[in-house]
Length: 99
Image (tube, rainbow, N blue to C red; front, side):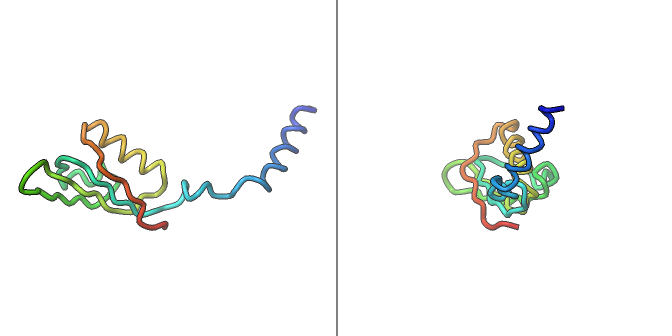
């Protein structure tokens, strides 16, 4: 019982110190992700609904840009994991705006 009381008091004291939002990790934001290679537009659902646009330079490999709002950092990690599983090199990740 004593340890539970101590833990409860410690938790209450930490509420005043800890931020309510961890730098926007848990809030929506718009991202642009550049990827080397091609991603079919029909894979939009696999990319959390992001818009898929491909650009084919005259020389060199194709570059695909994903653009859209993601619910939180976990959703961003999910998209990046999917790209990793597809063996597509990520060229850039930009956070354009918060929610």
